[in-house]
Structures are given as structure tokens and as C-alpha cells.
Image (cartoon, rainbow, N blue to C red; front, top):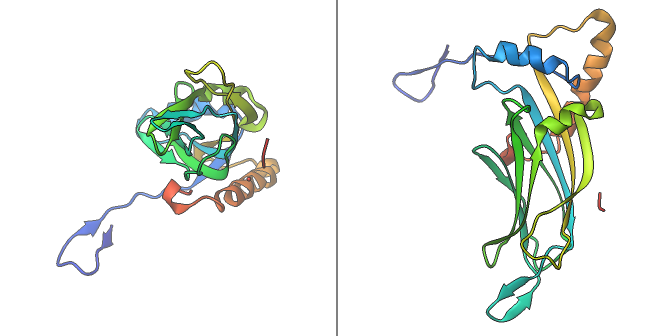
Length: 206
């Protein structure tokens, strides 16, 4: 319990817990069993490295057809984060990072929309099951994804790197694994250091 300064009364109650991270998918069920006592607690951190897009569809406007001014919007449930808008390009290169807390990757999805900023229309979209990351080595997936669009003349693609870290509350690694665990934590710290504060904690071409 912390006393608040600058006010006549009031206290701030914090519960702090140390978490280590793991990229071993088998630990997830163990963590979810503990988390069942507190359904609002995240079990994982998802890092999204947005690289670039290719062959985005042109936008039909009153003045004719023109290149879009694309902006990427990522969301998991009610948590939504946006990229910067790039002016008039069908091959945007963002090189931006985003961070999400995930409650259960076994049944959650990362949604992505590419919007044209000027017309406010969605020109392409993508849905990724986070469950797919659980079978990847080190829970990391780097891929050029096919985007969905209503215009058949285009074949838009999106280059992403996704990394999932399982949060282990109160986990104490065995002595022979302490060095490996420390290296993983240091790697996560290094990854998060480039993420903007606006994205919670929060680069590469085709």
C-alpha cells in the first residue's frame, strides 16, 4: 500500500509479481491452469514486427483511380494498435513494432486491416490464429501472408514477424537452465527496447 502525494487522502494498492519468459509451448497448459484463478491475467506477450506490404489494390475515388495511403490496424479482442499512414503507395514499408498481452493464444486471433486513410475504406485484411505459433520453433513465425481483398485483380501480401513469449509467474529455472533462461529474458528485453511506450512496451523488406 502506497501513500499518495499531493492529495488529502487516498492510497494506491499494488500487487507486484516477477515473471520470466519461456518459448517452450508445453509450458502454456501449466500457465493456463494457474491463470484460471485470475481470468484477466495475460499468459503471453505477442510481439508483432510489421515490415511491409506488396501489391495493395488501387482505390476508386470520385476523381478516378489512385494509389492508397495505407495504414495498418492490428487488434486482439478489444486491444487495437495502428501503424503510421504512408502517402500514396501500393508497396508500403512500415518497419514498425507492436506489443500485445494475450490471455490464451489457443483460441485468440490477431486481426489486421489495411485501411486507405483518405477514403477511410478497408482495402485488405488478414486473420492469424495465434495457435499456429505454438507449433513453430521458438514460438516465432516470419512469413509473407496473403491478404484478403474484394478486388480480384490484385494479390496483396503482408510481411510480418511474430514472436510469442509465455509468461511464467514465480517460475524458478533449474540451475542448469538458468543461463538459458537469462539469455531468453535478455533477448526479450532487447526486443522490447525498440517498442514505443504508446504500444504498451511498445525492421527488413520483402
